[in-house]
Length: 368
Length: 246
Image (cartoon, rainbow over all chains, first blue to last red; front, side):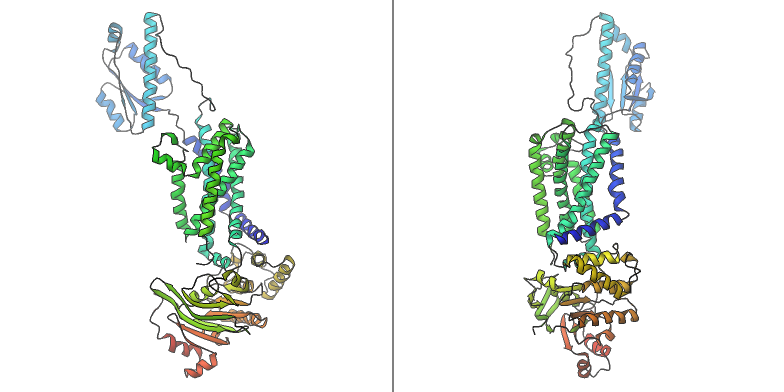
């Protein structure tokens, strides 16, 4: 225990003396939390649109202005031929082409039926499908307006009323911010701990430690505790930014959030430690940590829902500690879930913590 | 009196490469034992096995009466070690480094404080005690590293090329520290490249290609090889070396 005191004293001194670590710990999360949620926004706006109006009628103009009035579309070209409009798509200046054929108004009035043609650049799948369906629903709406004007009655429709629970304004940031918070803890816990230990290997001080009677667990705790504390500080900083910048106030219990953050950090610190026991240089540790954190992040459901992944990917995702913690943070912050509702995830995180740390301790050798 | 170090056919094999090839020797308590050899002769590997940093492939050895296979952690309580690489913390101050290493060897706060201030006084570092170790000149760092290695009064101190890269005056001062430690009863096991330093040792061994080719007091070795100085003895033996740095 006395040894641990000296180890902790040394680690904290070194951390606070390092000019690069503190900015990394405080500035990096702040900047990421301010920038990432703005960028990682799946709301589709400013879809570029090229219109081929071959009718030049009142109705065709009404349709176009109705489409533009929604604010989702940005008109980049008005052409008279489909070929000319296609050039916009080829040059990446338009995502969608709306073609209004000649005789659109006449046929619509006389025959009560008309067809429109919509071409979509589907390279960006979600933008294409969302843009396409926006356009379809606007045209459907336009159609109903015309019918109402002519017949005086609303077409009978199944009117669906949505009720959006837990995120009533469907604000994407409410979904992203808790996720990014998790990412930050993962970076602080996984990267910094791994690099710190490997750095001692590189400069040779670890040998000086290994030749002392210090116990393995003392050395490891001496390394993990400082980063555990820093991780919780980053978490607090993140929650504060979420509160004051994004107005996200956790609905659930804050101590419960911290309980999970604490256990999660132990797991992810164990992961960093494990990497450090296999790496000889900081470069190696960096690449290995980056590789895994990349996989963890993309498989964790931070950006895409894990439910829509194929089975093998869901299995992989389940075996990633990040997944469970993201789920829990979203549940506690947005839904106000209680411990009973997240106790499975608690169990998984404890298992990860025990497994990763156990492996790391077994693999850490004072004698090679 | 039981020897401080007993070594019998100690061997370390890395794949097909036999870094240390069945070396045998004893080191008596209080002795200054010089461990000489060209680069790549296997000195550091042998020393790392004795310090409990590396498992031998075969052979036997005890350090301070403890077995190098099974009782490494007990050995570590009894020894001090100064590696070839400077290994105090450069981003801690002189005082903080002493406190840290004294602390993890289990010195009490009171003893630690006394020893620390005495050491700072002996080394003449009173004005530098609050400075980061990284800012000190190399010679001072080496002297500090040595003093830290013997801070807990180990039975044996292992020094791996402790004076590499420092000027002759500083080396002389460094050896005064070694003599002072030996006078306190600490056994000194030291590797070096400098043949004038070899003369300061009670006995020396010369390693060539993983084997010990000669082992005796410097005076006796010079007689045996009809050499004027240790430099000559070393040349005669090390010339036979097959393996080199590369």
